[in-house]
Length: 463
View 1: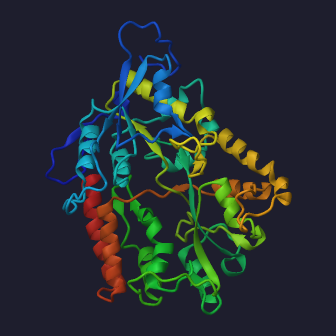
View 2: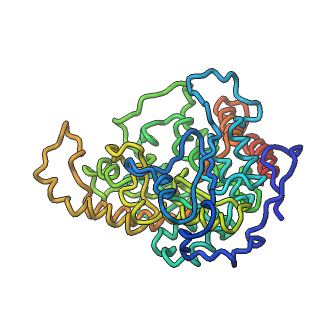
View 3: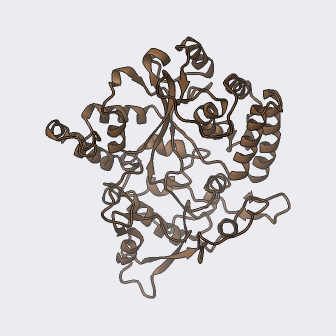
């Protein structure tokens, strides 16, 4: 049994059933014909905030699932019903938890309310805490015993990055890549680096070089550290490592830059850029970003770290889970919906938009065949762009090249880690402490100790 508490040590605790306690033997994964079953369809309840996220270029995938003659129907429970973004709700709650996030969390904890759980939290880091606590069923069983889809049809390294204690507790429907890039003449040709190695290259960079166009400590923090703070938390062991030499060295490096300004600065486009952030979330976006650049000069080296983790799969990833407390029959139905979402039909051209006219990319599909065909659709037309005029010197009418596609594939293969969202209160602790260092109020060692103590307390309570 897993004891579950997300709010404080004083909250009542709810037991979450272990995956092994659920008997799946009576609910085979193979699709079963329930069309002639007596009685009503089995109802699957899905939690949402205002509306569900499962649209595909104008198609309502929940509605399509409900129209199938499969014996299941999804009903929606809106935890933000009546929400009006123009209303004045007054000051935020003292514990940082909005009422609808709290209600959703409690319903997941007590069970028998929700069966399908997308990451619809206002504070999306709460979804990861629930996954760590065993609130979501292990999906490995369903994939391994499914006769219609295999892990090999999906990006397995993305799934592995999402695993918790070697179990897949939620399904990422899509993914992006969060990395750092630099010119090879500044950052070298390695595929990853430690923080000490990065410092060595930085010390050799031309005078006046910038990081993401800036030389102020707060902007360097935004580029190098803020996006990967979760890498210093081990949720599996309920530990954090903000007092490590690695973290302290990064703080000292940040503090060596110009004082933070307290206001937004313009990017310096005239000085050499040593490193900059790069989020890769689509073929067209990648081509638009790099069509004028020689890949022979660029190294997507990733973030510096002692374990050389490099690039990260971005979060959120349009995640969806199955409640660990649902009945085996409802879990089977919930899996049928997830299997539909990761099928080629729902993954190809995965715009996930209510508007059929909106084709914008927001992430890569988790389905490999959909990914490959979407890429081929682009690079097979690459020659057409030779005769296609630019519109205001922008590449909207241009297509991804095969070389660009291969580079994306290579970056994905070399990415193994997931960058998860932190809960707001944890993030605020870290942010507040680091800016105290920028204001010269505390040393890096004091900051690291404070963050370690404060965050460890929260992690211990919640995980």
